[in-house]
Image (cartoon, rainbow, N blue to C red):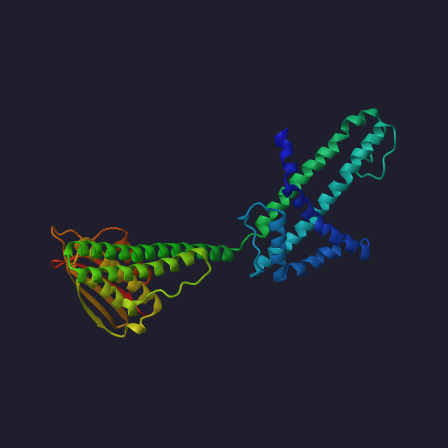
Length: 384
């Protein structure tokens, strides 16, 4: 019994009933002005439904009155963009008026029928009730008094569910809107993945430099070297905090554009950071780095950062050769260092995978692995 009564304590049941009554109120105004002329308004609904903004208004009403508790209700609030959307809106308006009329009929005549049945049971006459024109007074009608009320209650639920289902079907997103939502979600996931990579690269690089510098300062026993190491740790930590604050700002404000990311023009600070950690860095830069497009320059910076981080983490303070060439419509970035003892590769974790993914997203390629006794990372990104 409680389960049967549960829908009648939900607000959605009554907001749906109100939604069904709204078009009948407009119909009542129409019939007051033009008595006994119902059909012209159904014809008038056709050009009204073809107006693009009508679909937005109907979608907003349906979302807030038919499915207020469902954020992902599948009802669009965008104006009609195609003729198919316009025709669906026309069908929706006609169906809404039809269901509204059925609701008003049930809301008026079913309760009246309960009163008339009670009157018949007491020996009275039937009013102009189209449902009971055949009935004659009899005491047995007293047992039927609850029936119209139960039918009315069921009609409220059925008609409410019907109008909500029609709204999802006729006011639901078009294929173009579904594609746009899918693209937006894909971009959002890609942005989250990119943020995770940036955190890995920037914070991982900073921590690696700090650990290497601290270990070197502890074993050097040279106050001057210790002072330089502390300075390098301070600068690296400050840069990492700036990167962290920027990324957290993006996470806090999803609509905020990403700006201020370092590019290959700032590669010197990565090279100096690696040198301050004890590595001997031989850098060769050719071509105009400032002309490299933003996406390629930013991703190239992160790839270089991860490559140097891998060197410090897995090989230590070893000679490193860095080559950055901008020529022939491509950015060619290569980092080489001697293989650690035993020929172990300089890392096989998410950092190397992130390099390949960054390159692939820009239509480039990445090659990582041993090469003539060295560990080589080479990434080529197209600039066109």
